Length: 538
Image (cartoon, rainbow, N blue to C red; front, side, top):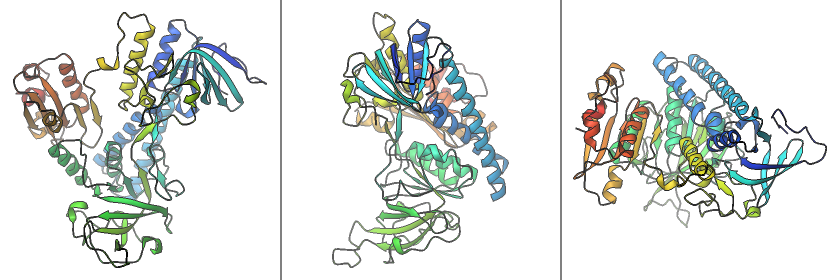
């Protein structure tokens, strides 16, 4: 048990009981910020964290910051040409992992001591579960610790969602994002299951390192929630990096390959080829071939026709889906089977609220249909004096939303006349750190049209921005949606270098209800990417 305050209790020979003002389960952004604030106000606080490797939360240990450290290292490797040979690739990847570990270790230590060194805070390392409305037991390495608290805050985050695919849990070389960011050796071939933004960030990063990346998407749509022109531009840039896509691809099974890699049995709808032996009887892939899907009758479900089929994951032994009488079936929807052999697999199929083992029912805390802790606009659960902050409550899965959740909770505890609520939150922006970052806020054109709004679309190619040319990064586009009669900014989509910085200017204008003319006429420094807003909103 790790109990670390100057006046911490000693390791007990019998199960101890702690009574405190507040118990925070989970060391994430919202919880740790709340703990420090409560301590400064003189409250006694216990923070329970399941793992010493997670002090500080998901973002600094296995999420935002380590991934961005690796992304920056990968971009540097591409710029320097370090991704051009196996030897230089391995050296660049090894250095990147070393730097990532240094950063996360440093931040983890700082976060730990920021709380643990305060007299009013006790940090306990162990898994917590409810035993009653105001009581929790924490299972530590030295035995259970019982905690009774007046107020309890659930801040346990989210965990990767793993699809039910035979072999996915038992096959070496299959990773979530956490494991893939901590490899000692760089995979030469990588298959990513899922083409959401997390999967695409990893696709872009590993392609920059020099890995041959193939992305499997279970349906025919690429980024279906984005506007078609934006999605097409993102896909084109990823393909220019060498990333290949296979659409309508359903992974049926995963197993070890004879060469030490991973073998996937993949069914692709809309493709017809001659029948062949089943994947189970396929020998392991030979060489380091790219996803070879040449000869497919429907190339829209596969990859760019200009892709090189000789340097990614090996795909072999195709068979059509048989009919009930065992004969090959060519009626729609046709389905071809492939055996795909690779060095590593990333499962990037989303994240789900982390509630397993909490025994929430003992406290009367209910879940939503999607498995999140049910909360109201003040983030109160269905049990009195228990709140839920961050990813576990089913809101947007961003660190800055967890921080804003802290503001919602603290506004209730500090005596505010009118607490800040989730409904007061405006215009949540997002950024995806691809080779060219993609950032957006508010409505896109698809959503504005569905809402029946009268709008105009503003477009600007990034190549028209002087700073982008100076940076030798002219790729991408900027797009904004403006209400026709009022000039109100409805949303913006920026596929551009430094978009993750510029999007916050647009958000601020939207929060202040400033019309598009405000950004059109604003005086920006030059040369900057931000000054492109003058032309975008013209």
